[in-house]
Image (cartoon, rainbow, N blue to C red; front, side, top):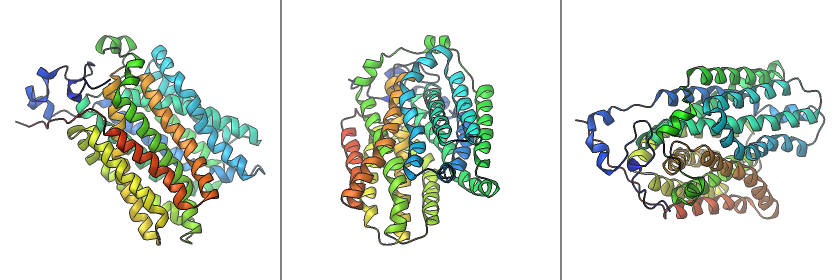
Length: 424
């Protein structure tokens, strides 16, 4: 399934600015398409992503210390961290139905509101169970926001702009993520609860920006403008299957293995201070941010398939090389290489989902993001078990295997090379 939809510029869904058939491809209107810019909703979503991630970056470094202040052990700390991801995974399947009922803009704003309220209440919590429950509620709101935002992003752009749109959106997350920990460090000197109140404020700003500046197309307008592609047909589409496996591999490797094991590797194998982990991640994030624009253009002009195959192959080799590093500087170089590959890994699969699901892709997007959450939950557990039983190379090999599998499976995608648009 999906082989009949080979060229992403010939997608059957009637999206804004999209072409509808082989005879109305990019070359029929070169002047107009050459000047096409990212839609306003994409720019607004990038701003929303920035404010969301600034607050998230403020809270993450402080959260374990704050939870420990309730007199609990490290298992309980891990449970609070996992509760957010687990509830995201549980809530994902229901978000598509909610968007059918209320629309993407409304669900996005409600989701951000839930995270904002729960985060502020975490700062007022008196017991550990309260913190655990509130962080779980935040995960539900995060699922609502992330699925609604990605659905809006993919449905508001034509196929030839999807890679660049996703790259811009992710750029907001990355820049916010780089600024957040620095602000969080300053706020932590005031009190351990101050970052949670700051997070609530940045989320409130993000929610208001989304509520008032997004176009908020009514569901009836979307229904009239787009073909309804049944979920079963989307699931059978090879492009969607590849995208889901790629997102599982990305969640497993980046949010799971890399995030969980590299801090331990820096301290126990390289004998460096823990602060160097943050520095290494920050440098890699800069490399990834710089690579996002070229990655988006590559995905839109050369194609989704070569981007996925190449990026996940590079990512797999890089992850396998990391446990063998002998110096901090070599680790930073490898993390930067991984960051550049991650720019492609983040944009190409999401664009492929839009190609397969069309403008009404709420449920497929929810399923796609559930794979990432599953990888982020399972990755650290499996890698940690392998590290306890065997070694660092064995733990990182789990990321190598799943990323290599994503690259090999992507070879079975239909060709989606897009011919460049020549400006007149």
